[in-house]
Length: 316
Image (cartoon, rainbow, N blue to C red; front, side):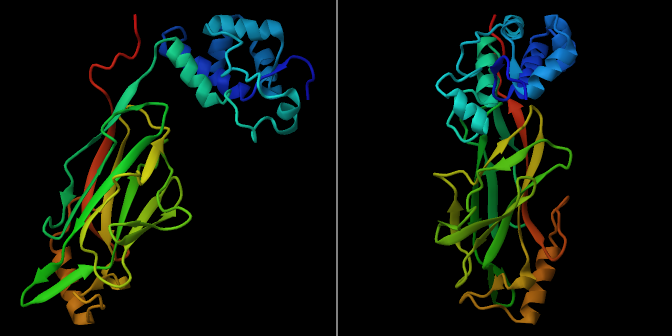
């Protein structure tokens, strides 16, 4: 490992961020690090060797800072409060530090007046039967900076179902989830119920899956779900790595044959009654629903990331 020069935490990612910002400003033809090196008059192989070693000579550091127009003393570039010993021992990853790449990105975008505010726009939910279940997902309503997590909240209202002659049924468990497109960079973070279930409206919410595929189970082991279940105080997750015009979907579904379909007293329905309810639900199948493996969609909603109207992305 090189021993000369100043150690810069996350240098490779910071060079990438500089290229992206300068491209956004129209100063680079593409957001590539090679393009940045050419613009800054720096030999690309020299720059590559520097970021691989996470060290910069004083001249190279000043050259980068001059081209990107930031001060090398800024704590998001290098946190002087972290000792050289701590940096060398663990590369600073175990330290609380100000020079994380995300902080550097925020600083550089602010410096060039490139703060971009976005909101999550939700289409009207498609519901199988609004007298049986109402479902919606929404953002905070306050907007979000594009480089920061965007929180999501859900609202689910469940009521008993009625089928002539006199059959009353309900669900002991429903599954809200997010459906991301395979090619999307969006990731799901801060998932409510991860580690241990949380109580919402007298039911328990748990989560399964990972940052690509996440599903929550809202359940009551003793009786049917009934009433309002809303994540008012805490979002059920946050989205990161999204871009303007990214789209995704939210869905709530039920799987009647795994014990989720119950009567008013919370006991599982007979096979004959189950079949009747399943046929009733399937006769109302939602268009573009993701029904498979016994799951029946009760609600489906399309959401997208949109720039807030009248937002000034770059001040003159």
